Structure formats: C-alpha cells, structure tokens
Length: 168
Image 1: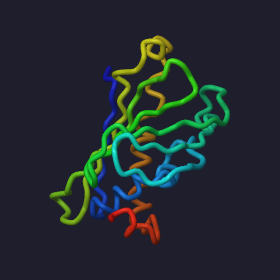
Image 2: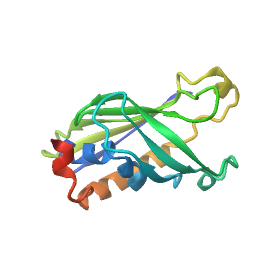
Image 3: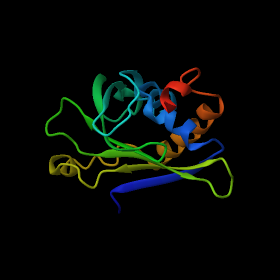
Image 4: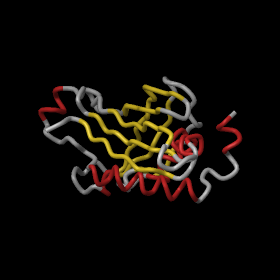
C-alpha cells in the first residue's frame, strides 16, 4: 500500500484560471468534496510560506467527533500556474505532516486546457499518527470529486471579478 494518492482530470481552461481558484482560500472551500471545509480567512497566496485559515467541520466525515475547529494551511511549494502544495498546521501535537497539492500541465490533447493532478501524501507523517492507523483521511473518491467540482467551478468563471488581481 502506498502513502500517496494521485488523481488526474483534464479541465478545459487555461492553467492561470485553474490556479487562481487554488490560490484563493475561498476557492478551497468552494471545491471541497468532503464537506469538511466550511469557510476561510486570509488572502490569496502567492509564494511558499504564505498561509490562510480554514474553518473545518469534521462531522461531515462522521469518523472522529472533532466537531468544528480551525486549521492553518501553510503553503510548502508554489510555482505560479504549475504547482501548489501545502501542509496543515493545527492545535494538535505532534503536527501531522501530511501534504496536499495540485500539479498543472498543459493538456496536449485539448489545446488551451489543463491537465490537473491532485495529490495527497502522508509518507512523512509523524510516527504518532502513523501508529493511529487513520490514514488516508481523504479517499481517492473525494480527491476525484474535488477535481470534478474544480472543473465546474472554473467553467462557471470563479473567482468572478478577481482574476485580474490574481494574475498580476
């Protein structure tokens, strides 16, 4: 069994349009297929080291009674219109250490489109969490669902009125 899930989807939009959603804290909430992400605070990210807060509700997974809580999304990798990855910083100790992200490539089969790879990697989690045997927290189906919602969200023009400011 692997400690990483990757799924892909072709999205008929340019990488900059897809990336704009992925850099926006509210974009993360808009495309979440799990129902855990409820709201966000913070500005769009533009570099590794940037962060924002996500208001979570774990009850949507119905696995652990964590209720509502906040986490900080800490950007670990950032290449404009190509790659964004992050880890979650929360109040629990030790920190978990799992990584989520998206890799964007031109879609050769559909000029002007983007091949989006969503990944979830828990290979470097703290041993405490490995021993808890709770990974993966997010399923492959949820990652695929999020890509479907991302496709729909980008095609509908999200984020409306903000593209010019995020493409600076």
